[in-house]
Length: 203
Length: 203
Image (cartoon, each protein chain N blue to C red):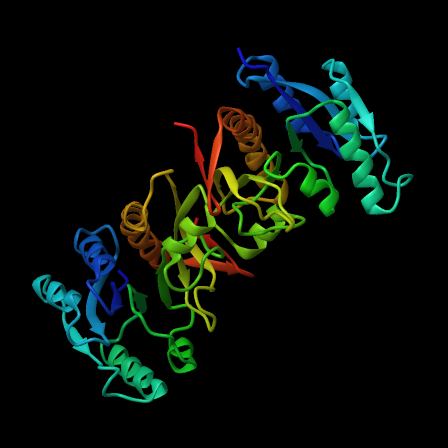
């Protein structure tokens, strides 16, 4: 019997995707355990929620640990102390340095609220509305050096309605985020094969 | 009773989207008639199919009518002679000059086999596979000065499978093209309101 996977989750805010990941692991839908929730923001609401869920929490305050590389190094050190196999970014509002990217290459996932490669970066839902797309969605991908760019594990689409606001569209996308992020983590632990940028699930 | 809409369809190849548009108009699903199918390629297979469907055909050979602006002017003149209200590009493999774009601004549609703004230009399905997206699709949009760029009327998504080839993915997308292009034309004749880049269907 193989050991269960160990997952670290990084947040900066309320951590709704973190909660859906923790719940999926607890329910047995993912063959892994949430071993730490780490935030760069001491006041992040998600830290309280992680504590309520009984998950260890850590803070590496980006206002105290500088510069960026030193902050990333401290985050990496903390995650390694918890022996994480996989890092999940869940609303972690930091640009990553090579210190982080190299430490967890092909072992770090991010979720982004658009159908990448469309609308990378901030305010993806607003970008989508302003562009006038009729189909929006979300993407779980490996993290690489470029923002919102690494190989894609899963995507889900949602319709955009004529009367959508940023808020109504964001809600519809978030429902899909909560569905596919746990699926992507499950797929990761089942084994993902890379072929160029294409990812293939284990048979 | 208002007069029925008059649609001109431009093709360069086999014209499968042209056939789906003609059939939708003939079935009454669209309140408009196909008045001409025009090709820049005399040997285009779609011309034969248009003739079989009883639609008038025209050829403006881009190898004979040069330069590009003169060719576009001849196409515009032909379409105006048929008094078209709407021009539908259906695999029309030509870059358009302002002569065409200005003559039919907000009265010319194109269909593109990707979820724009992702993968504009040639070989969109191959671009999508190489990028490794898990959701692909197609887009019907107004034509403006930039390639595959104008305001979007409709989009449809399809899943990308792990074992997809360019050919299997193209087939899956084409099914959706044949579905949404007639819908978009129907929506055009029902009235489309523009708000920035966003399009709104008539209530």
